[in-house]
Amino acid sequence: MTMTIDEKHVADLLRQLEDEPDRPSRIDLARAIREARRRRRNRRAGAAGAAALGVLAFAALPVALHPRQSVEPPERAVVSGAPTPGPASPSPRPPVCKGEYLPVPVKGRSLVTGGDPSGRWLAGRLYPGGMSHPIVLWHDGKPEKVTLPGSDQRMLDVNRDGLAVGETFVGNRSQAWSVRAGRASRLPVDGGAGATAVNDTGRIVGFRQVGDRQLPVVWKSPQSRAVDLPLPGPRWEGTAVGIGEDGTVVGKVADGPSGDLRAAIWRTGSSRPELLPLPSLPDGVAFQFAPGSLAGDWVVGTAYRELDPGRARTGWQLYPTRINIRTGKSVVLTDPFHVEVGNDRGWLAGQARGKVVVLHTEAGLRELPRPGGGGAAVGAVSSMSDDGHVLGGQLDLGDLQFRAVRWTCR
Amino acid sequence: MSETADQEYVAYVTARLPALRRLAYALCGDADQADDLVQETATRLYPRWSRLGEVERLDAYVRTVLVRLFLDSRRRGWWRVHLFGGPPDVRSTEDRGVEDRTVLRAALDRVPPRQRAVLVLRFLHDLPVEEVARTLGCSAGTVKSQTSHGLAAMRRLLGDRELAGRIGGER
Image (cartoon, rainbow over all chains, first blue to last red; front, side, top):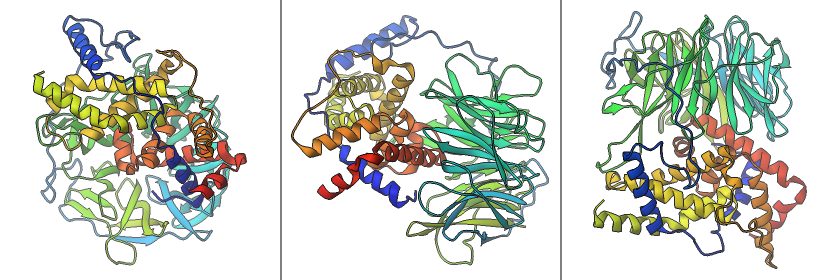
């Protein structure tokens, strides 16, 4: 990440805290082993579960929301280069893309944080210095600057009318805001909140903050008060991350702050959320799926698998994944990149080590070009239009410099 | 678990104890809670040990367990319960550096737990954004914004103390 001078200063200060507690350790590994064995015995005996931190016992997990759906085996897309069946009229021809720096009204760093389904609107922010970032909205490439209060402002989504939604950080907490036609207004909600997505009817989703918890919410319009979306159980928390044109909402939720991430779907007319089935992966089933956005009928996100114990390495393998919200079918890519955005045609784009940005289409994986040509570079992507023809992001230029970029693909 | 595996487990955790205590202490700002956190992490690790086998990413795994336990404990209010009693970790000393660290630690303790975890992992443990994202189970973008929020909070908390200049001068 690129840091401002102020950030770097605080980060340097933080490095002072690298000391150990100055009292002798009370940690007792023999006790850890005894306790672990006791818990295992209890679990085998059918006890409710291990006590966390050795003391507190918890209520049983909430009842599962819906019966386990049968999961179709993944349409194993996709060793890079192999033709991939797509949901709509696949063309084996890879798209031809070019990148350009977006013009900015203020000299300095800039980046894109979101875009609309048509590709005509992009939202981003500027870095005139300090932690406060003016918002910029590009319409057909023409920038307009909008100032929000606070710091770390970002607009995460825009609809076809140019209504942008996002958050800023004021005082000690997030505030949800919308911006349209150069005017900013705060979204009505009690307490801290942030907006993550908007559809063409002006419905907005996001989260509200209650202590350390985020709870998913929907605003019927920029003037309406936030309404909580129901969660699967009392401990669940999370945020909405996408909203379809028909009002279907997708959320990233977990059973408690250290619970595994799941995608929840709130369908219009239904009063309960559904948890999408975890995708099948090349070597097992994902233990968590982190949804990032909704593109047509597809939730785009990352599936996680714990690497098989006993192998020479462990940790997690991450798979760019999309899950169909109507059928539950998942399509999992084995290409190593961190997926950020996608579209209804099944295109996915994201970051890969040492690459500008990568785009996966029916024709396989390819790197998007650096604006103006040139050698290796690192970038990021944060929006893709429905047709995949426009992507917004940034290119890191080194020396703490980065610039907003628009890629157009044909 | 076999005796050999037990020995390996003890050897591994013993070797990692200083680093784990530093991480836990940075997260909680309290020596007793830090030791509770490490103790629980070790307890959670044990049943999985024989299955983890020979691992390159074991450190990352253990760190993830610890950080998630920390976040979980904050969420549940568990951190207000002192297992071993005792006053908060206040140290009086002539050493200016220690005093500054105490101020810093108090400021860090007021940053919301998730942001604090991001700051500690990124700046005290020098982990890349992607590694922090995997540890916390969120996107790299979230790590970046949490970093930004956390640093902004630290700046506000430390702003009028002129602490920065003092520490900076002594480095």
